Image (cartoon, rainbow, N blue to C red; front, side):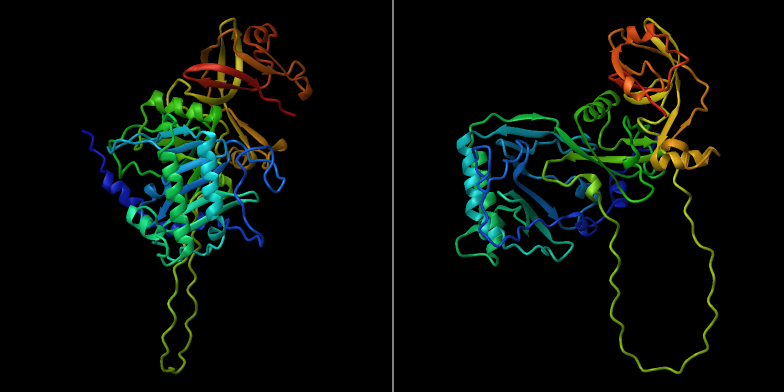
Length: 472
């Protein structure tokens, strides 16, 4: 009999204050000496002659952060309102308060007309000078709740942190004329109130759907502590960033990669409690929308390491006579096992006999008019190629920065539609000979057994593309 998972126990395991997350914030407060102006609502250039920002560039965003929070909740923090340069507005869609909830939160979107967008820009311009005086060291206390504003000016993007503007009382108190301990706090509250009022009174229709870009964060998963949740789902893309050897993982997805991820969620019945796996490593995922004003994962968006504890100042004491020093005790160093190599693409250890959605590397041993015989293999590149070659007793670092492992004798029969696009090299040793044809023409070239390795892309259970892997 399976034991039901205890969500409270799992969340207690991941308890972490936002003190550990504060290091990921980047202060972007303007330091220019001259007046600061908001971007102009029309024309191909700003008032300073610079090109207008891209349509999806954020011109306003407010996010509520801080306070003691479990790591799951801290990683889910997302803006409560975002306005982009083309007038598109984003906000979190209502979500049923059940456990476990859906893995990917939906967003509501609408588009402001020119009048409302101009009003937003005017509101930014009215408060920009006061906001530019913000102290970039706030908040000084790790457990303090605060609100983060992002506004775009002609010259740059500004990030301002002020005491929390979550409650209506806090906003009204700070924005009341002549009150509030800090003019920056008051200006931020007024700006948030004005922009929220413009959005609330806009005539646009709100649409609900999945976000166009997501940030995936991974946290550790313990099978023994969480029995009964269900089998792990193989991550369908390159999951190396989500399975680090220590700390937390972080990955941003858009476009076709996001489509593959969402298809896997739908096909596998995934929810927020489902464990995931890449190359034998288990983790859980926290997913939220990500917007253009946020630094990418590679720039340190993942939570940093825990801060070093503060050491208290020593208390003065009366000097004692010296004692004979004892010889130091030598302890053997504690070493961690080396990280295992992680294959590119979806890896090379599918959860079952069939290949799930994603990109898989291997060799075509036979072709027919309607399919291929596929020998799944592991393709490693970069640092993982060095690790894999060492694990396999091969030359390390490997020549040409890649390593292939093929120790599974199984052959899979895969159906391929005749119109499936295939990228290949008629001259195997010449990378400039690359062409794209359909599967039927590729079969006529009689590549089975003689050609290089290939990558096959599977989406919704069907092969949608084949690409030969050129090697020197």
